[in-house]
Length: 452
Image (cartoon, rainbow, N blue to C red; front, side, top):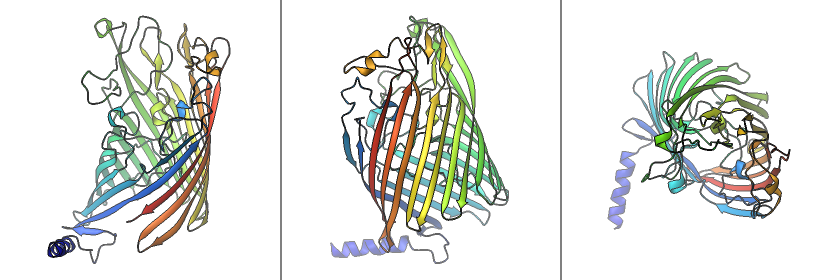
C-alpha cells in the first residue's frame, strides 16, 4: 500500500510540475497553467423576522404582521457558500490566449432551482465559461455562464474583475445589478483604455405581478413531467446588452443599454382559447463608476439601472411585468441603484458601508395591473392570519460590514467578516389608501479559509 501511494505521488508530481518560467502561480500540464481557488466557509445569520432562508436572503419576501413568521427571530448556521474554482490558461502564441473557468458552491435548491437570476441548477454551477483573447487587435470572446454584462466591472470589460458588494449575504445587497447566466460576449478594446462589448444572454421573465382580468390567462408554466418545478417563460430571443467602458487613470466608468423581449399567449383561460400572441421589446439604460477617492485608502462605487422590465436584474428580483386588461403582459418601469464606500484601514482590514434601492413604478387601468389602488384590500396585513398580498413598491437596504484578513502564509489565507443590514419593504396603497410596510434587521458572521 505504501509503495502504491509513493508511485502515485511520483506520477502526480511528474505530470503537474510548477513551471519555472510561468509568470502566473499554479500548476502546468502540457503548457496549460492551472490555478485552483475558492474557500471553505463557516457562516451565520440572525434575522429579526423568519424568512426560512439560508445564507442568501429573499428580500422581497420579508413577512408582514399577518404571518406567524413576523417578529419571530431566525438563526441559521451554514457552510453552503463554500466555493471551489479552477482556472486553466494557455498561450496559443504570443498574441493569442485561451482560458477556461469553472466555479461552484453548494447553494442549489434541487428541483426548485430556476433560471431567474443565478441560473443555479443542480449541481450548483456559478461559472462555466471559456475565453479567447487576441492582444494585437484587442478583441475578446467569452462563451458560457458568468456574471451578466450588466454587472459592473472594475477594470475594462474583463471576466473575474466584477465589482461585487462586500456583503456576506449570498444574495448580496439591494440595488446590485446582476445575473449569472449563459451568454455569448464579444469585446473590443483600444489600448486597454476604451472598451466596447456586446452580449447575448439567457432570457427569463421574472414574476407576473398584479391583478389580471377575470377570464384571461397567461401560459408560462413548466411542462408536465419536467425535471424542474420552477416556471420557464416564453422567450424567443436572448436579452441583449451593449456596454462601453473607460479607464481614465482616476477610476473606471461605464454605461450600457439593455434590450429585452417579452412574449405571451393570452385571451382565454386555457391554451386552446388563448388566441392572441404577444412579442414586445423593452429598453433600459445602466451606468456605473468606481473611484479611488483616496488612493489605497477610500474607494467609492456607484451603479444603477433604469427602464422597463428590469426586475430580474436586481437582487430583489421584483416583477418584470404585470397584466393589461386583456391578459397581455405590460412591462413595468423601474429603477435600481447601489452605492458603496470602502475604507481600507490597513492592508488586512476593510470596512464598508452600502445603501441601495429597487423600485417598481405602478401601472393601473380599469382595476387591472400593478400599483396604487389595484389590490382590493391590504387590511389583512396587520392581522395575524389575515390575507395579505400587497404590490411591492420598493425595497431599500443599508449595509455596514468589515473584513479582517488575519492570516496569510504557507498554509493559505483566512478571513473574518461581519455584516449588519436593515431592509425596508414598501408597498402600494389599496383602494382605501392603506399601504403597509415591513422591515428586518440582519447580522451575519463569516470565517473563511482559502487553501490555495
